[in-house]
Length: 271
Image 1 (cartoon, one colour):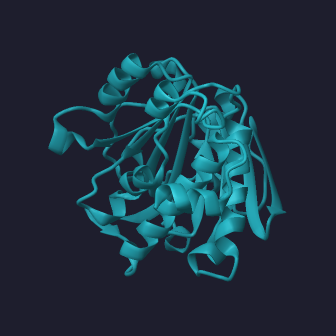
Image 2 (tube, rainbow, N blue to C red):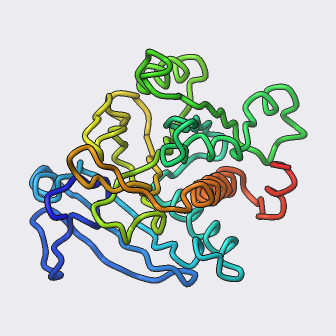
């Protein structure tokens, strides 16, 4: 599988534990989950890791996806902390959350599933600011894909951002892995943005601070392996994995954006 495309920064690290010029990495454990923190510091690092300059946090969520007891609240809290680390926000900064992908193709539906459980609060803050004082203004959209909308995700997000003027943007998408062992087992967060479809050789316009004008956090779960010759491999139970991943990421975003919310609170609001 060496040489095949991957969206995961961890799969580009030397397997022998060696170092790459311009790249820093470390591993640690939080809440019972293993975290790999990779920082691409300069252009030399970007060339050696084949990833843009930025920071990449990859959380091994194997116990969550195997539905171990109490793994969901622990996973939500950890991912929420990772969001806060990569996307520091002021108390009233607004956020646009964009779910990328095609909801009609299950392995590509992480973004739409996440959007479905992300709390949209911008209108509530505008209409009843006192009642929703603890909430941050959040807008949510689903971009669809070029083949069904005729528009690039970047074009849609740029247009929406022009209307709602967010202070930051979060994009959620399905990713491609090089190894089948990574499928639906990890969550990657990065402040470098994302090029949708790059992992399977279907590159679309880049979504990053450089072309959207505000900080961009990209969150994704690997759902496919590009096996070559047009063959894409995905897990047998992908339907359930996508539902679990979408809920996990959405709850983590909700907790990160709205101070004081618990998993039980989010359960109530999401309904």
